[in-house]
Length: 344
Ligand SMILES: [Zn+2]
Ligand SMILES: [Zn+2]
Image (cartoon, rainbow, N blue to C red; front, top):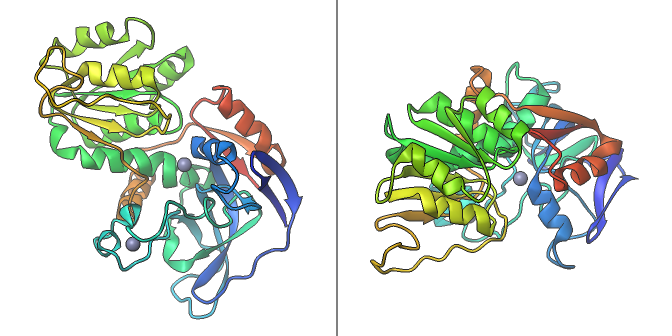
């Protein structure tokens, strides 16, 4: 079968590999669609040894059930599925509570991260990683598994602060950000403020439910403050889907006292947090800062429900498998709007 693999650190190429065989408890999935994620760029850019090579990338997978391994029941060939990418140990305190994204045993990894992923015609996954997606198309289902799930989990963590009439700021309207806006629109009655440096991204934000859009620039904080009011008031929740120094500065510059900062984008920036009552504070008093990671299987089931209800739709740009490297180049250049989805 054809697969797009990281054959050496930083090298992504299409190669021919044997079609894998599912072991006991596993399922061979015919891949229908795979989302291209910024995390894949981090994997490609990581120093040698940080991730195994060669490895088939792709952790945002939907497809159809092909072949069942020994002992697998409850699935039949042709059934349309989404793949939950995390494989926790199943026995630690995190996993026992259903929080496999907080597994305390297995290092950061998963399907397409520490074992072969979905940028191929087929992928083998543990049967327990499959969720049914009903009549959703595979190109719609794939982005739900990360671009949808990650902001959904972040929003779940901040749910008590998302009171009707409060404000939530979403910074970075890319693959995750445009889903965050829709999840807020579908599940809350907050005022949604979207921030991006790109006009097309702000147009997308408006189309999917943002009430206000603010172009990123030197006066971003002032522009948002005009909407949310001066300190110590402000935005109750800020979701930073970028995570570089500039966006983190915007995030802590607009969050309200007692607000929630959700640092979803792994952009490598730094946010100072100093426990003093100086003015202006690095972060306001009573504010919590969280670095959410992906989400839980239960949350993915809920995200799929939002998708099936027509309340969460990824804006997708599709590429055939042999153009996957080009899709990642465009993603790196900031030229993908919504989610790039590769269709093997
Ligand atoms: Zn990802
Ligand atoms: Zn665990």
